Length: 379
Image 1: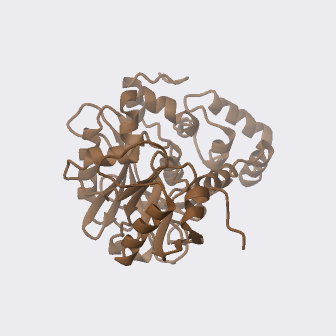
Image 2: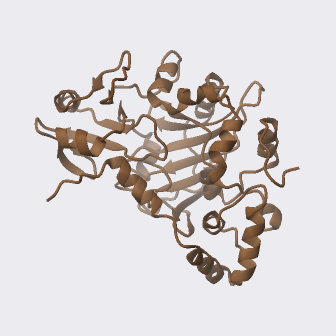
Image 3: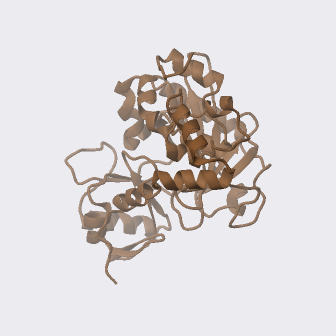
């Protein structure tokens, strides 16, 4: 069997890009599903494309905005993910960008706080950059010695891109010997092959594997996290416009919604109750009451440690307050919430796909306007 030579990150980017379909397929699906003519759908889409949300055709169809049950006002609440970064940059101090997007750096900033979080074990980086206080793995021998020492003690290792988005290239190591390491769901690879081909030029942050609270045993074997959207307004506490639980399907090391079978669950920010659970495909979403793989009811359940989770997210947001629109990924462990990472901004599509509602509530529009964001059609 030939060992793969495509890097883990490049492979995930390739799979991710395959979600785009020809415009005719989107319109055909929307027409067939709604019973509406392609001409009326195209006219409605063009109106939304020129409106405040600047929707793309793919998003118009995937979000189900062609549904005749929706009102024009409800459709106008949706915003395209393609302008996420321009809006995010307008809402924050760009000099803070690396403080959130460089995961090693943000972890070091938070180490001086009381925030529970996985520590940085090592960094895979073959450049000349240094990481004070953190081992740097640049050679196959160094990687082997580090992996063997951890696995020998029964500790698994999670690797994620240090400056990454969408969970591209994540990996999990639970077994290793002197010649090879085993990537969960991928197979056995020699250390040199892993370093040269599978990691490639990607800089990886290695962390201990975080385990779920027993609440999640009914739903997944891998770590689930809650995406907490945060708007720093200058008030005592940041506003939380949405919370979404991300539940990975079997075989995935990452809970990101673009991976086939992963669930995105709308969660009530006030109570922690799961209101809706959905998977996504190229043409739309599918709603579930039960977790589709285990058959156990998930909608209507309430997440544990919810008040503590919100407190942790708000405290972290204040540390990174110059990033006015931000999001946190928080795991719920047996010991309570653990901050996995902080992000500048937060994808617009995730809360909209999870809830079936547009992100542009009156409160969110007012916040963006206060940050100087000006979108077509806004008052």
